[in-house]
Image 1: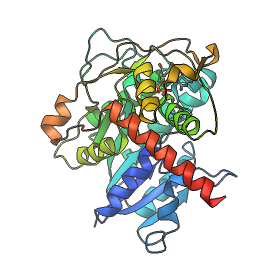
Image 2: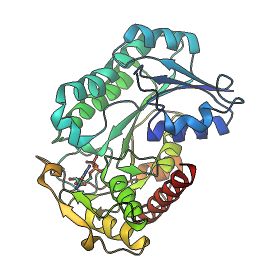
Image 3: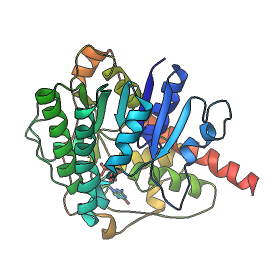
Length: 331
Ligand code: GDP
């Protein structure tokens, strides 16, 4: 049975991918950062499952810039597939912490590629790239050949990493792929991203736990898809005969306002009764025309995105209502 190693295993995508790989019989190793805070809520059900943890799922401590430790773990675990999902992934935050964003997102990827280059048994490698590499593109929708023109520190760092993956594939023959992911959401999305912030607020307001939501601009448009569908495609990418880059997107955009409206309506609320806006949440620069063309993934991988942004607004709000109710009964 194959073995996979995942960086960023505690994140939204890492946790879905882990579940999917375990269900297919993989042994899964994950890298986790050593922090004093050991909250890994997305992995908790697996972590506390005695039939899984330390049987088919193993966690190892390593920071992304800790090259020696990562090399040691790779040599010890001998993975067939390496999914590199870790990194500071918040675009807004990347304006406040550009250096560490570049260090972990950009240099962190190069360091892993350098280790792989020297390994006798090289795993197939997947790097999670981002639509932010396109920034302000001249063409819409974007595909794998669209020039990269990032406009945020996160986008610049991801562009560096994406191009390094291409370079190591072409120059050193690594089986290395970029999953160029447009925004992908789920009930496990971090709470500082706008979708989850909205669905959590809609749930809290509907249960009488809060009365307002404070946001920045509502005009931004995003191509929002479903996270577990995107991790399914990532796995398919590493099962192909040849390595390649793939855009993972729905091909449809919605505004923040449309998502807000759908989430609030799903619990019988009108967002206009609860919205406050604060310039604090506005970005120094916004991507404006990001929408992906998933044709290559559809044709080559047989992958189709099924969940729409408005489905996500409803599903995520319902999940937040459910977990708040559970919290209330357990207290
Ligand atoms: P990303 O920027 O595409 O990675 O995703 P986000 O979920 O962080 O932001 C999506 C859009 O929501 C952007 O256009 C933001 O400017 C907009 N937005 C409006 N208010 C907020 C807010 O309070 N928090 C965040 N994160 N984004 C907001």
